[in-house]
Image 1 (cartoon, rainbow, N blue to C red):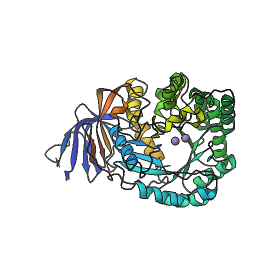
Image 2 (image 1 turned 135 degrees about the vertical axis):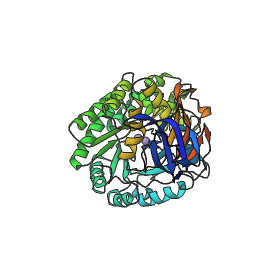
Image 3 (image 1 turned 120 degrees about the vertical axis):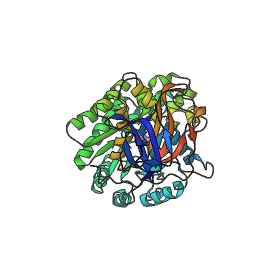
Image 4 (image 1 turned 45 degrees about the vertical axis):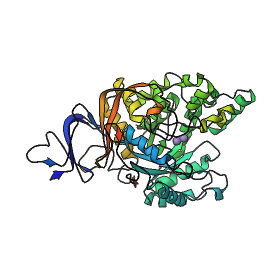
Amino acid sequence: MTHDLVIRGGTVVTATGSRRADVAVHGGRIAAVEADLIGPAAGAREVVDAAGLLVLPGVVDVHTHARVATDAEPDRFFRDSVAAAHGGTTTFLAFNNPGTGSSPAAARSLRTGLREWLASTASDAAVDVGLSAVITASHGDAAAELPHLVDGGVPTFKAFMVYDFGVDDATLLGLLGAAAAAGGMLQVHCENRTILEALTARHLAAGETGPAFHATSRPPYVEAEAIARAIALARAANAPLYVVHLSSADALAEVRAARAAGLPVFAETCPHYLALTDERYALPPEDAARYVISPPLRPAGHPDALWAGLVDGSLALVATDHVPDRAGVEKQTWRESFDRISNGGPGIETLLAVAYDAGVAAGRIPIERLVDLLSTTPARLFGMPAKGAIEVGRDADLVLFDPDARRTIRAAGLHHASDYTPYEGRDVRGAVHSTLVRGSFVVRAGAFVGRRGFGQFVGRSLAAMR
Ligand code: MN
Ligand code: MN
């Protein structure tokens, strides 16, 4: 067989080990992983020299809010997908916009939301994309719709315990059970709404309106209590629970205890909780507003606890919670008060860069564990058996990574649909050299060579993954 491509002489990294090997690609899939594939028995249309580079499975980012294009911003979904490619992310999941009004009529049905999202993203992405459906308090018939979404390749759903569109405990209990019965899994944003609203009101009454009070209105116990409650609800529903964006040692303790008790509780953390602390809220308010995300950045000590959770397996994976808010637009509401600032920040392009530097280069985790956390486990937990590992038969989603490179992260050098990065000026070790999606280069030697619409919708199923 003549291979389409052989990536020669790199160090191939999987979740279980690393070795010098050639990777052959045929028809967009991995056809062989062996030493010295370029022998008399095997030809190739193209040979790429990867000597000195790591060959990693493409990153699978299961938590982004990449936004579909609008007439005013026709390129924003495409730009985020290009940013993903530059960052080594070959598949990302986005959320639909369900409509967040309080009346049932304001929320489109989940099926309509899926159809609309597919129509508005299908020709846009440069890398592969999947969808998780947001369920709000307005989706009165969500439980009945879940089987249709599962059939449509969308087996994960996000619900919120906070915000006007969040669901109450009774609804959450019902959704957890309905998702499990349909073969799906609920992703839950866990914070105690009652307490954070009371603390917010107390700050505002005292005239404390700056971005710094975002953090003190949502201390770690606000997160930990909600996670403990979500775990209890999932237990009562006999359902798995996926905790999004876990940020604190207190919250981690709840997840660790649940897992020790044998409960199917999974949690992700995000690069910003691993690499940044609440010192950022001491910056001038215009800068501090860039770090208004929920949950907030935590005091020193919490990141080390989260790293320990990644090492011991209490935390399943790392994802970005990417929100393409702009400092010059969405974040400007800091001038009103902290509770009016759009929550979120960009991260789709910097996931591998920050996690490699702070994790592997800093000696906290081995490269194999990083691959597990960024690629293999996300693909498995979210039902993408063709993704997440360098194995014969899987999609040839690959990253050629230079571990010896040095670079400084700057917004001016990024490609996402935002105008800043939380990591401005951060020096990192390692850099993405090239990214391939299904055997095709989308980034080559640092330059984007992909195209709009190359990305495919990844229909997912959790059935085979358990
Ligand atoms: Mn959230
Ligand atoms: Mn989110």
